[in-house]
Length: 142
Image (cartoon, rainbow, N blue to C red; front, side, top):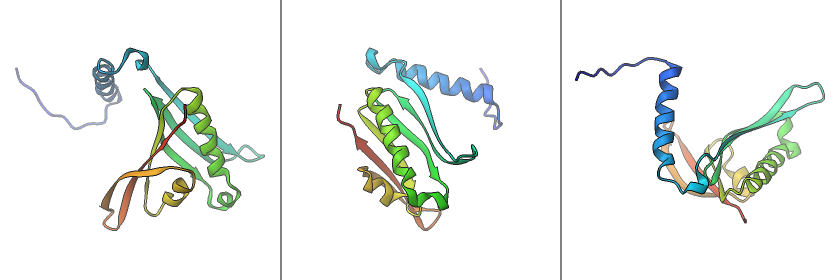
């Protein structure tokens, strides 16, 4: 057999790789957690329908992962970031998640997440040569 390593942008092959890993992982999780995957997208819109912020995440097995959370700078002082977090935490509770995880860079929202009950469980220094990448988790009471 002969194999080649190919570097290309190919969504079909990318989906194949992701699906193979998903199937492999699925075989190792308890049956009651299998198939638990659901995206959640929350958008903060103004009276004109303009997106002023939002939160993108997903439920995966027994946790919810926040991939993106942003609120426009001029809108931040009104507490909408915390409201987005509260909304996603309620969703996670409804989905019977045990915890929420998120990551942030040192110049982004570390204090914001800490203020909202998230705890750092890991970090990587020297990101971009001068920043720290933080990984946070919030346990949910079920």
